[in-house]
Length: 304
Image (cartoon, rainbow, N blue to C red; front, side, top):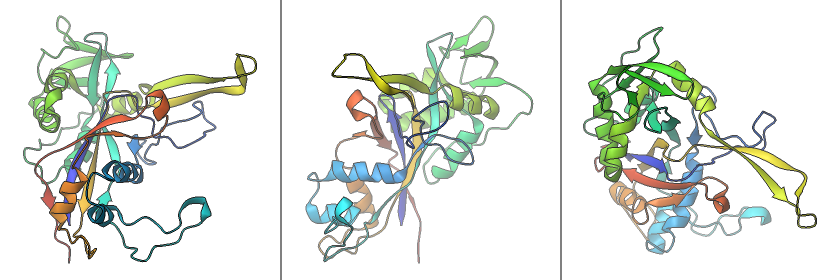
């Protein structure tokens, strides 16, 4: 099997939700149960890829990647077709890597933490130039930057002000190494990433993941009265535009007789075509435009 990490960049707010909630927010975003890290399910991404590649690659190859359409699907039932088989493409969940946070200086910072970077290091296995580990410092609220030229740093005080947080700044070479690595997948965003990339401690990041998401209050207008319909006021949460998420795709050789592809060919077909996808819900109000990018290097795993 061949695997390749991929990067999602939210070009508009991204709502990958879990449905109705009884909490403060009516429509929250999906989060990993143990860590509370926002994510986009791999099944959602694969479904969008399936539709995006339909008609753009030959039909037999499309079936080899995603499997054939069911003979009967949806509310009418679920029956396999004559040549039913599993698709050769595996799409993993995309987990938050960095998110924009309002800053007193420079408008916003692109913020991550040692934990998120450590999880990313595991997914980036096989990519050249992955930086080393951040050393965790207990009991300190610090913000690490590549240099004091970072646009979010108050240089006279050597501090960063993120939302309600006042953080002391430290210069750390690993920050520049991570910014360069991300810019290799998104070269057109090199300047934005380089001048705004900030690493904060895990506790601060946990707080920001909970409080720095975008929450919109929406209503439905009654056609009869022209005012808000009864009971039709709700709040919905989104990851803000400029958020970065990281996931891994896997590919196995296709044994579909009409399209016998190697694992490498399956992977190349998956990334072929449009690089902007519509993910999550609320597309009709502009949510979910995401750029998909990857690194040219990929790791290969041998499976018996």
